[in-house]
Image (cartoon, rainbow, N blue to C red; front, side):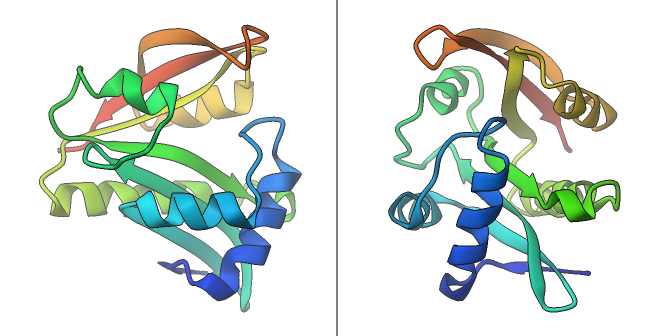
Length: 162
């Protein structure tokens, strides 16, 4: 397993991974990925035997990202990293690859003197896997809001990493 910076040559694999989990994240085509990659402070992939099997995209508070969940955190934290999305291939579930990406992101945040990492996951309908995953890292709910025209609710989460 190797964690490395995402490269343009990884983008097709990233889009395919995202599509495989679009019910738990949001749609992202190549154009959207290029935009998000340009706004991200952290965009890494996890590779196993030369195959991209996961990725994580995060923004910091200075990003020009227009997203209601990201905007929620701006008045709460002077400096923070916002996890826009993390996806691990179902074929590699349970291998701690998501945990490895989070550990790497937390180390990155600390290296930038950023104490808070934020994210969200669906609480209606409840994404139990994501809830348990984030609980293991000490995330706590700091708010919630409607998503997708009121058909879903997100739990807005934060953890201190210092």
